[in-house]
Length: 162
Image (tube, rainbow, N blue to C red):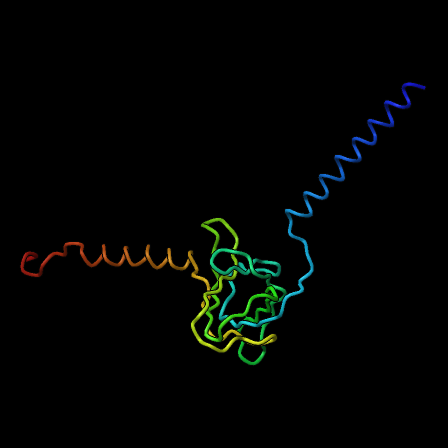
């Protein structure tokens, strides 16, 4: 009979630890409903931005990317974001896609402007900046260096050939 009590207590401890782990995972994962107001931004390309990516203002998470689609008329990527309700952005706010690092993911960074009018719920961010393509930039750097080497290489002059 004494053994059954120990097993019951041990089972209760395991269940309590599992409940603490689930609570911790839920709080760290930041899984909450998006109750903010929606805003749309259009980009020429979105790079590695995904649905669920962070929207940050001064490095602080203030929203989430809720959906991305292609506008069939302009062929631009239309990114819809949900911002906190307590945050109002000026109409000249800039949205830019930034990278967390060389191997990190992308996020949407907001740089507020100075206009008096604010972007309403369901409004658009007018000024956007697409991400820099590091592979394309590296390719340009490498090939521009190869062109300079071929231009600077000594060539035989026609007079020296005679």
